Image (cartoon, rainbow, N blue to C red; front, side, top):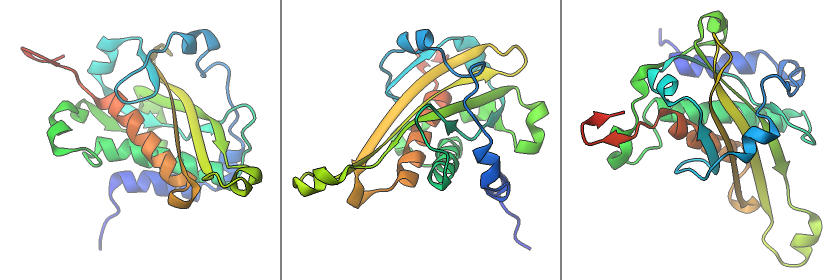
Length: 211
């Protein structure tokens, strides 16, 4: 009997939980980055903007739980959002598993200091990644009528939190767009997940080794 890989099982568990589970998730002001925090973000190598608040805690690692991203203000809760949330998780796991990385960059990502927690292990999680989708937009009809190439756009915000102290470890926001004919929201979600994964799992080199 072929066993389902642990991280694919994580995705299956979210799918089996049904759309109602996702629909019940609303942006929680206690866990979302404040406007003031987001203003302090800076351009980064991997996401549009971010800030590592506690570098020592990030490099310590631990058991990481990835929460499905919820709907932000003005974003409709629907099947498309559910699919995007799952693909964001898949993208983060791609980087954790060493996928979607050029060979020359693989030694810069030290994901072995992390372990991925499944949903039923939430009480054991030491770090929690949570966020929300702030834009999920399709092109308006007039752009196609004017001969413009229609594009879709996905934007997210979120943070990594130490679950014991509820202290923020890092903050991020990211956006991505693509021509509608060449991509879909699921693909954009997976790419953004990969960006986030790179931001979390990247370890900066020093002359005497990794930080």
